Image 1 (tube, rainbow, N blue to C red):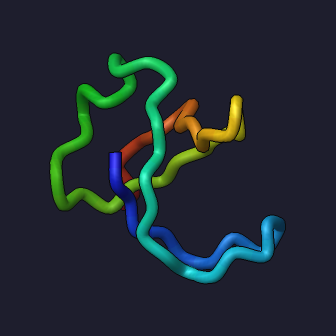
Image 2: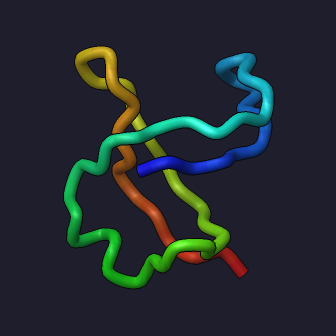
Length: 57
């Protein structure tokens, strides 16, 4: 899944668009292309994996 995100200070990342893997595709049920979202992720085996995602208000 490709997401554009703002800066992530704890990782010293600027705002960018990047690809993430999804831990469980069931968490994507309420997400539509173009939605603004809030998400959490982990690094696993060199990949960045979304563990939680929800539409942001």
